[in-house]
Length: 275
Image (cartoon, rainbow, N blue to C red; front, side):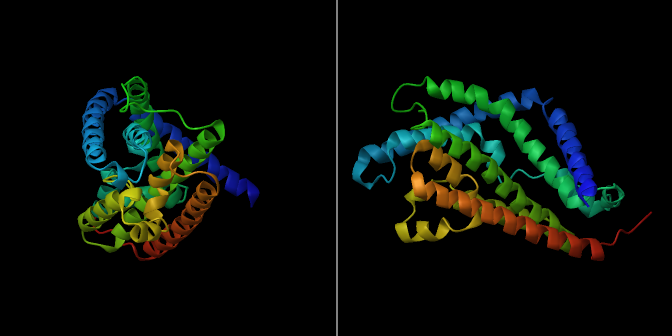
């Protein structure tokens, strides 16, 4: 049993490496994305700065925490953006080319999962360093700051990896559910709009009313971007951070389990018409 699992593990690593190397070639697209993210980041910070100046008592985060949150959001947007899903996967489901994927000696869920992680990681690697370098040297109060201590930084790294895994697991649910639909566009739009709001991309979760925030923080969407960025900025720490990371692990297990169950059901009922 162990050799079989190790063999599958090596296959997943191979798919990850191939997709990562391929995506690292798109440097021009990365440069365009960096420019867009700088503009968007400055716009967001200025909007919140005006809000903070109008009524500082109503601001639920320290402004330096918010600035760090926004710049980290822009630097690692590729890891958490839910509107970014592979058209190649949707196309192969819709046009029947999924039959070629099923011929590979590997679980299709694991293969697509590895590819999705590679796509997001490669995009983040290409874009994050220039954004972080510039953000650190901006004038106060718009500059990005370092975490409060090394333990916070370690928790942030762990939480960011877990958050990306939750994001990919959620996207995998959309891929798997697409086997049961005529077109995946409706699923994609509803999921992207919902996740964008509830994971803190539009506005950070602390800006929601306290009762709403307490509910949202229990949902899988909050386990994506919300947790790692608030840990980095120092908005959540200590026992609260440990609780949030534990919830991330729970959602990873739950979402992957559900995704694999849906995948097995889809493989039993999938029908490929034509040649």
